Image (cartoon, rainbow, N blue to C red; front, side, top):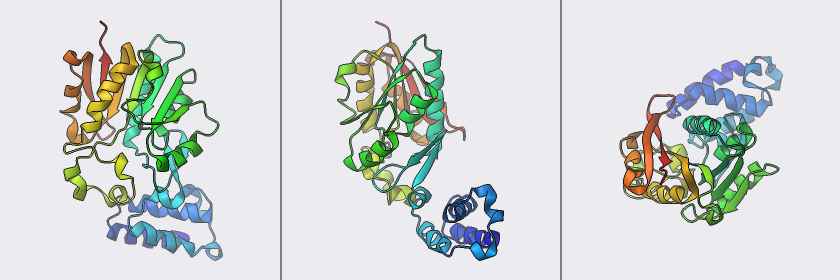
Length: 279
């Protein structure tokens, strides 16, 4: 019975315009029934929980899957998320993968990493987990987001602070090996084209940044230059439509070298990197 219900729910979600209807129908079925997705067939007909249709109705209204389940998966992490914090996206996993490779390639015993605009803490926690000897620092401005960040970082070794990414970590100037950020980068003019899951549920502070979407990235360029040691690296996520623009913010005239763009798993421009030039 449950698999038949999942098939029906899949069609309902598809009709509502949900991008991944089958995945979400199965995830919600597993969530409601307390099993893994691969175990849905083991749920007996009498054990079907009618609350399934309640959560399907919420997803039909384009409430994010992660808000309904209260969790988001990111690399090897399971994070708590909900209203007030940006839900981490799969595209950002490519950013973290590049950052991990870059740090491991450095001849530094205990690399110092700063995550600007940490949100749920996904990037900082992934780096702390996968680069065991790293010293990771993270900053978030929003008090609403920090409710979730603190939950996720409880018991971790990440140095979490509340503040503005543009003037954060003055005590670390010139000492950082890698700066990473997934900042807001959607142009204000694109508001009506943003998916309802983001536009209606993610905090605006985490989405929009000026007329062209690059206001905060321009500010982070200065912050990263201040924080990084010579030879240190910055990696910053951007929209797939901004691939030709972001590397140009990290110019030689502003003290950078090797500015480049990189694709995500869908081969779309997703993040830019640059190295602080050696004087």
